[in-house]
Each structure stands twice: as structure tokens, then as C-alpha cells.
Amino acid sequence: MAARPTFRQADLVRAIRASRKGGLEIARTEIDPDGRIILFHAAAAADAPHASPFDAWKASRNAG
Image (tube, rainbow, N blue to C red):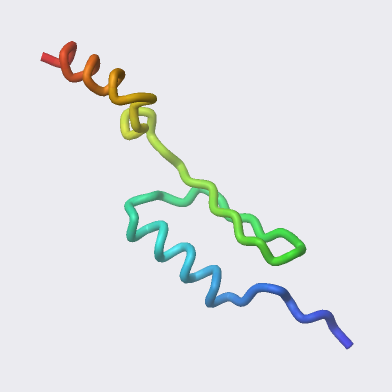
């Protein structure tokens, strides 16, 4: 008897749709043998959030 996969394609599709709806571009996906789905997102350096509120404030002061 063949082993049944611990994930379904529908689960993967839901995860991908949710990521795209959140504005994230998917660079790679992995599925572990235990069924865990891992999505790796491609983030541009300009879109990366600042490390702290202070860094965001400092960046806004130097922007203009």
C-alpha cells in the first residue's frame, strides 16, 4: 500500500494565494517529508522594513 501524502495540493495552493494576496512574491517552495509547506519570499532591499521605529524616523528625516 502506498503512503498517503501528509499534505494536499489544495493546502499548497491556499498558502501561495495568501502570500500573493499579501503582496509577497514567492521565490521558492519546499515541502518537508512530514508535510510542512515552506514558502521562501523574494523581497527587494528597498521594500524591506526598517529594523526599528527609530530607523524609520531617521530615514524619513534624511529623505528630503
